[in-house]
Amino acid sequence: MRAARLLRSTPFRLALTFGFLFVLAFLVTGTIVYAMLKRELAEALDASVRETYSVVASTYSSGDLEDLSAAINTYARLSRSDDQVYLLLDDKGERLAGNLGSVSVDDGLSSVSASNLGLKGDEQFRIMAGNVGRYRLVFGHSFAETDEVEETALASFAWGAGVIVALAFGGGAILANRAQHRLQGIARAMSEVSNGNLSPRIPLSGNGDDIDVVSKHMNEALDRLSALVEGMRQVSADIAHDLKTPLNRLRMTIEQAMQQSERGEDVQDRLVEARAESDRINATFEALLRISQIEAGARKTRFRPVDLMDVLQSVSEIYRSVAEDNDQELEFISEVKLPCMIVGDRELLTQLFVNLIENAITHCPPKTQITMKLAVDGRSFRVTVADDGPGIPAGERELVFRRLYRLDKSRTTPGSGLGLSLVKAIADLHAASIVLDDRKPGLDAILRFPAQQLG
Image (cartoon, rainbow, N blue to C red; front, side, top):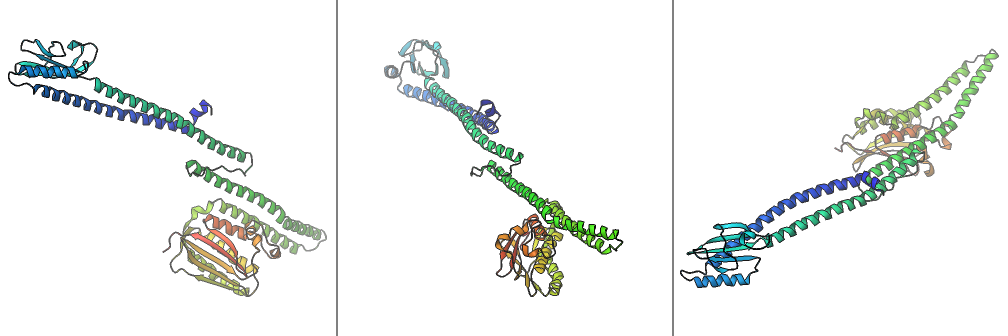
């Protein structure tokens, strides 16, 4: 990946941003820790200087200068010449013992440079001075150890910050490269789609991250788009095929009417026949338009809470007499006593069940038993429209949902082949599934609606 592309990469920029924030937080925290460490070291050094001064001073008893001088000289020999300093002065300021020349320092604790103590170098010493009897005792400890600890802490913080920066850049580059590779997969798929090829899909990594989620939704959208385009192609072909015959019949009827008119014969019957044929063609186009509007989701603005049981009862009451006139029986069975509330369009739901019932009445012979059943299935309502008629062959149960598709045995009966297409469109609009199953004999049309409430 080129440097310019890397710098434009969003993951890399995010990694740098978080790296910068982490380094900033690390520096702020390190500064606070360093200040606390420095204070603790200073307090520890003061406590050590006081303690050593007290130990040395305790060796002096009234008039016993020899013991005090010997103790100071012993401590001075045991200590590093550049680390600890001892000095004992008489009341005239003359040096009596120690490893330090005669100097003048204030009483108590103070910080004094090596040069002010007559020593070489630029180190600082923490000095404790005071009187022991009529003598003056001076003890000092250099800051070398505390400075070394502080330098080690600063070096650790510096290395830590460097490692974090390196990880931020390196990790950002790796993440950017992986993300860019996946984004290029999305770009390639979209480029193919824009060129008219709807088969490519975006590859998923399988880790369930946000890019996978977006890619999954895009793949679903592409599946939907592919299905719609294929549906449009299929509809165009079916319209050209299935409407060619009625249009030819209409043309022949008109030509016959014209010939009769030229002979001076009455053309009223031909005109009535032509009007009926044109009405059937118009009804087909209106049904196609209605399906397209439903699939576009335009009717969702009319969605309201609907009692599914009430819709089914209304349809069964209306069509019970129609079935009886056809020497068939229609029965409604409900396994649910409470209202079955779903969210939808009552008019479209009524049309859905009317189409299923009319389909059964039209294509089933006399003595057929048609049953509508309502039940609860988990968190959804299951509606079954069943009959014991001839059924639909297994290989054609999915095809019957296509627009204008008709079984060979149904081509002699009235209809346009759009009834079940409309049923499928309405079911999809309501997020309901529909399955056609073999009842042996007959057919089960099983719909499952997501419930608004189950009680």
